Image (cartoon, rainbow, N blue to C red):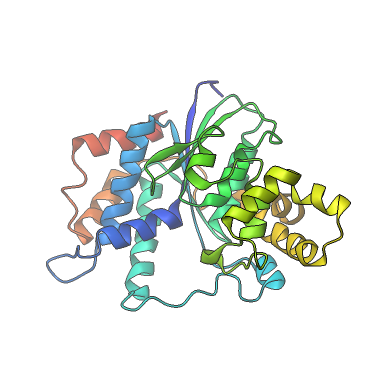
Length: 295
């Protein structure tokens, strides 16, 4: 493996929802919705070009983690959005995953994308490669912490902020450093995933707490606080990606849909014809994606 190889690891679920919202009005002449079908390949190609990727891994959710549901039954129990067309979303997503395989990407489908992405990145820890992890999920900041000893160079790109997240700017972007990430989220909770924090702890109080004690474990070593201890023990299992990785599986290949990076122009054209997307597959687009299979 070349030491200067550039690997793009993408949160496909996040990208799919961004595309579906951004291009929600797109449809074919026959009325077939095509926003997600247009948006995801369009965004992936732009990312490959921007970061000059040699290899692309993209992961999608299949469902909620049984492990986390066992810990917190209300985990990710979100209300259904009014007007959201689930049937169209999943139909397009199925086609998108297939065309991404034919465009040279390695595609994963199963479990939670967060865990799969974490496994993919951790698998590269002994290699001298450059990895760009694309996600708007704030949990991934923990992977920039000093405790992760590795040979790879990792950077996180947040498409929501259009920003590269580093140990130096994460405090400005999120309010916490990589080292503080898990403890911060344990205390603050995660509203999007329905993970409750510690009552009475707002962002100002959390900042003061971490500046005084550095970590929850250090605080609990000197002060017996059952309220914080109980939340810490539960939320850490829900938020700390390393715990799940070590206890519940390190093999990302079980969710991998294709073994090798291939480029199939005929199948790409079939997809483009179905969704009337010939405008997307111009020469620049095609040459960018074809390069993945040729590397």
